[in-house]
Image 1: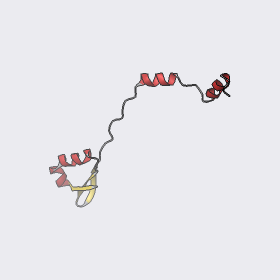
Image 2: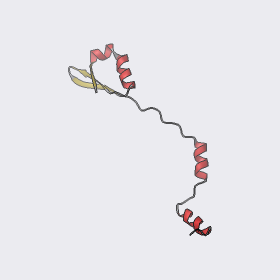
Image 3: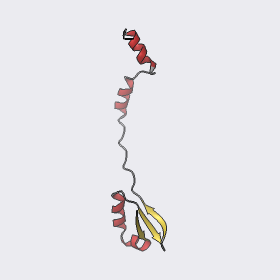
Image 4: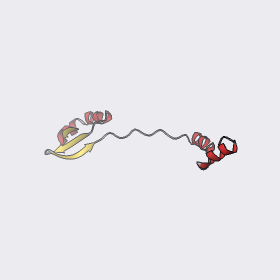
Length: 77
């Protein structure tokens, strides 16, 4: 964790942002007391392809027991 005084933070904001981009947390202090924190944000999650998901789930059985029933019907059990 990096510590910067409020006056240092004012003059070095770009540097603090660069630290956050690199995954580091930056704590800003005033008179030696922590008052704020700059933290990296999580990258956006990949969007779900709904059509692909629908195609996959359309092939799935409605309930797990149907797998066993299919095997019995095929004479495998």
